[in-house]
Length: 106
Length: 224
Image (cartoon, rainbow over all chains, first blue to last red; front, side):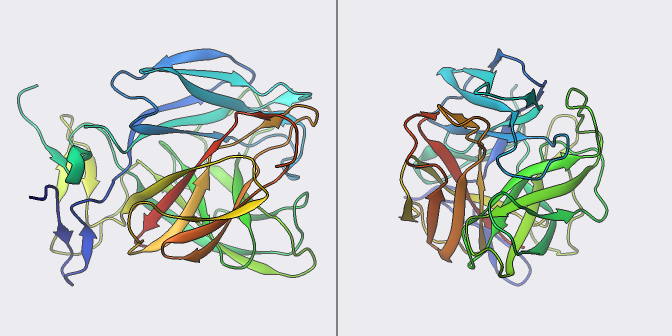
């Protein structure tokens, strides 16, 4: 027996099927430039969600190898995300957007 | 809470609930990039909506390995960036092929409500505050796969979870630094091959130490 939603539009095009995964944003933070810290995301972990970080702009943003550190993030334990600035030779730091996207929780 | 909505798909995985917003397609466009790597092609967003909740950029190209890497705000102070300001630019880099123009399609996803189509069929879910967290009449974004990519020069990856019904777009979290060469970021390039496979390339794959060891690649199935 199968479970799930099957949603079609007026043209009968299948938009959501039984086994489709629909990413849900369960945490969103703007991390201040150069900061280190932890976030509590109860109920979620590496087993059912994915972390996404993106540097938000920068002075004279251009070259991909410009020397501005943003943030790295990883699951420290289920329910807790650690983040820290990339510091390897960075001349300056930028803020980052951190998203926790759930797709496999039950 | 005793009332609400939660849909589980095959395997018992939650698809949609009445708490967390799903991604929707907010903007899309295309641009042409001539120079590679250290030079960038970039899009200037025509009418950036404010505020943005969780903007995520992704790209689709069959021409060259490319990556969307930096949404740029209109600021001059790195310590003062706020998503309530418009994100005015998007930077995209390509791996190789400098001197020749290659096209790339980009999209901006967000959890913020966007205008629904006039379609008369579908489903809409609101949270307890009355905010629309899912609307099938908006342009949906399904998460087709999450591929973990580590240190390899290039490889072809096939999705583990079915074929895209829409257009496959790719977004990767940043890998900001590795030992010995400062400030390199992000370096997971993608080139779409089909509705079920992608070729990935990792800039600096031959360096001695990455931080972290693998980067997630989001495979987004977009009805654009």
